[in-house]
Image (cartoon, rainbow, N blue to C red; front, side, top):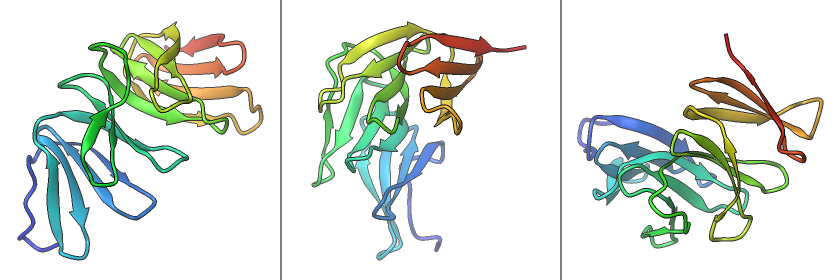
Length: 168
């Protein structure tokens, strides 16, 4: 990368590469996307602090907003629209399982299971403190998902919604 491209901020919070090989940059002063053709950054928003970006199985690019709360979607014209109807809740993480069930960390105090429709309304809320950092399905048991958090490791049964927290 040349020294010409400029970012909205040097404080980079999250990076994501989507299926079109675009690089999304979430910074303390907004959202940018790297244009490989022009070797430049296009600033899409300076009004939000987004903490996490995720492209779901339908190809939608979803963003967790810290500054204004909620879950947002990037439209085809790169405009950004809020999806959820969850008030001022702050979301910091998104994960989608093989059944297209969406999970999100809400207010650093719970794991939200979100509706499968375009509104992403909270269906179930499990009281689990900490910031969620990563998730994966158990390779040997399709009913189990693992979540890495700032308060330990969580094993969740996606059918019964029962969970175990492993910490020191």
